[in-house]
Length: 389
Image (cartoon, rainbow, N blue to C red; front, side):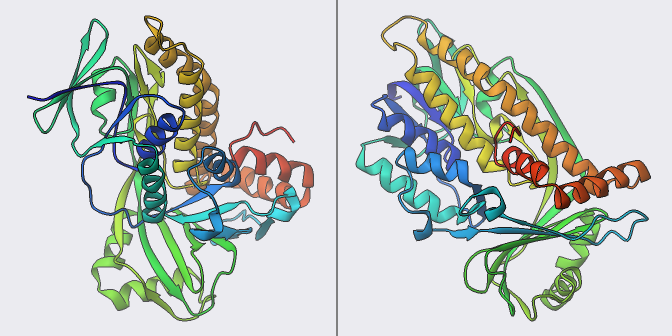
């Protein structure tokens, strides 16, 4: 069996793993990226401006306009027919003094751009996954699916919800399945969205259309799994009829630009995010419903803090990896709790049927619509800030 060695091993071939491996390697850290071959990721990711700026500063993306589509406005329409309904609300990035809330990127294009950067810096990538981890006197030994192994001081787990790295550590994990699912697809619209993301809020969750350039839109429809399955399994015309109904006919003719897929929704969190020479990033550390555009944004904030924690250590010193993993966990703790609370609270408010929850949500949107100060706080929190204007 072939045994390899590296200062850091990043396990996971998704965007967060590729970003972590590339960002660390660009700073001269010896990194081995374990990235098993996977089908192309045809989804898109709405990245808020702080994430986009970090990608630019990290040298991972030069010009967002070259690969993504600008998100300048967010329109929210309450379709719940509840006793207390929220007002229709339009948030404009100009109100926050921003050129945009963010950019919507095809995941495949982001991966291509990250990979192109990694090729220029000589990042070592091995097309295999981890099957098990065990402690050694100097760190960790990773058993690989190809029969080989890697000896490393620090292991970065970017290997998703079923993380092998997380399973190897003594992490406290909360994993709960929600009652809703999400149907995703790419659409073509008769009346394009421009730069406005539109959210129709229905009793079991939002029906969201995110602009993807020209007449294209990315759909995320959260609802009862049985409702989504009936719409999909009834054939293309039945699905398109359901989409036209859910979008209130506002966008003219709708056609499918990709196959649709349904995913069950769950909430996962691991605590702490790092310890004993293990650091969890992305969905290995946290997973939420696709609400509030926090998934990949949160994962990239993980990577940014991980890079800072590693660079702050003298890697010639014994025990640097364990110290870096602890420092990483400390850096991430506040953001992870705050974001988890925000996303779960927003999710519960969107599916709540109780009158007090309806009133709070409607009142909150009225306040955001009417008070610029609160809008600025909401913009900051939703984009990964502290919420302080």
